[in-house]
Image (cartoon, rainbow, N blue to C red; front, side, top):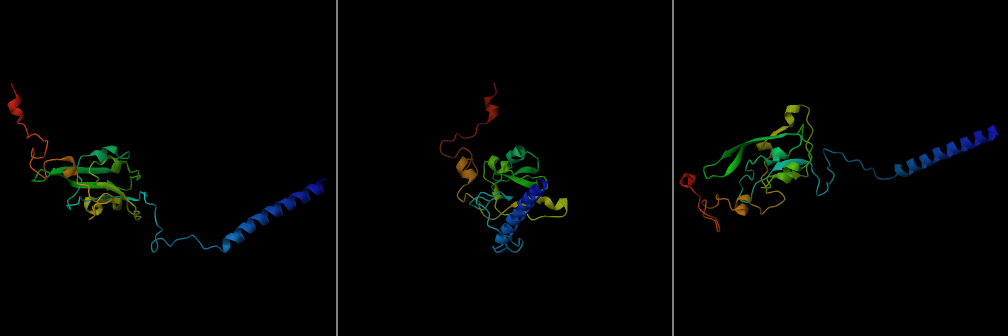
Length: 183
């Protein structure tokens, strides 16, 4: 009985080896799926979140109004900025910084942005050796295009008085001097 069981185990083992070899032989003659990455890039899905960019509105101005919602929504606290106001009353980010060494590319910042300034781009971030090289400034993130929504202009859509004087938009009251409301 032991000789028969040994032969049976041997035949079963050889059958397993032959099955594995047949799979290997089938795959040897197929076209390889390997892509030489820096030279060739594989097409990414439309909703792929590869990197973060700052976009411009259709007029060419920066969309970011430095509302800090992206910074507040970020679970790893990798976004920082400082707000400033232009002479025409429009807010903008004086500086904007993302530390991609901490960023998990979750997209919560893009969802929180009311002006569509932060958008997820389908390009991958190139790897770096130094951690300081992963910190991207506003100049590194700002692109020339409008991103995924080319017609959206936050100031025109929200009716904020930068396009026309404050209180000059349809259905808008002129500003009230709060000192006149005191008793």
